[in-house]
Length: 253
Ligand code: HEM
Image 1 (cartoon, helix red, strand yellow):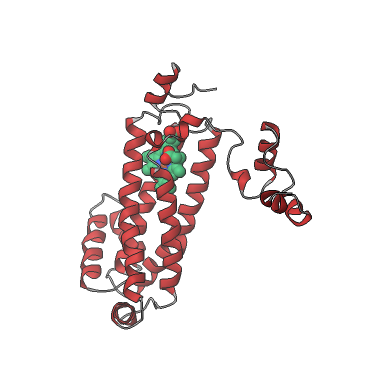
Image 2 (tube, rainbow, N blue to C red):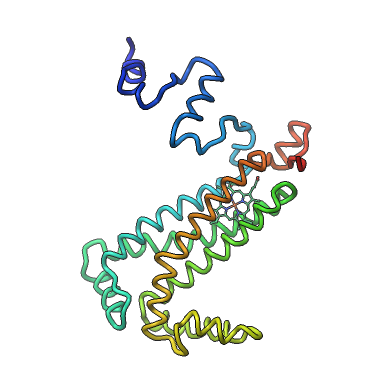
């Protein structure tokens, strides 16, 4: 027996992965359907919809960035206390004293900037490929909510270092919220836990940034991906569709 078969044909492997990979299209589909991890993917995908020029992988890059942010965020939480003035001291300690602390901060900061940028580019890609059209219009709406939550994640993270930039940035931002007609002052009060940017505001932004928004974004991404599948997989994009002589966007069933 050759080396790859030695791995894929023994009892231990077979107890986890029940179907061999090579035999037939049916067998390939069974492997995907019966595997806990692989079943997230559709069993069949149009080859052209995976072309780089169809998506520029921008949605996938957004998910990877969100993953990096979750891991580095969890590590940062080990060093951070959401209280005044401890929050600022923690950040300074991390920046100047803890080994690799500055690297860890940067590993959280740059992917955060990149995620805002990449999600925005992904939205532009969807717009210019016209793949927001039926049956994908609901997924566009989910996307808009994801974009807003990405911006909110960025904004709530801004207060956490509790430095001058954070304090005044959030003061200006929440005053803009206050200018909103009717609900403005109430929303600001709710966000800050009072009328000033102080201890309560820091705690609320911390809970939003570290728990509520990441959970909401994770749920939103799952819903977004589920919709991609239910809407008939990725649209092929105008160029690929023209090359195949078909329509770019699937018609509403
Ligand atoms: C956290 C933010 C987001 C993540 C992680 C995300 C992820 C993805 C992924 C992985 C795909 C499939 C591959 C691709 O098209 O690149 C996709 C498709 C799609 N996304 Fe997003 N997305 C996000 C935000 C948005 C936004 C802001 C919009 C629009 C306002 C949007 C609208 C869509 C639509 C309509 C599709 C289907 C496109 C097609 O079939 O060609 N998404 N998204």
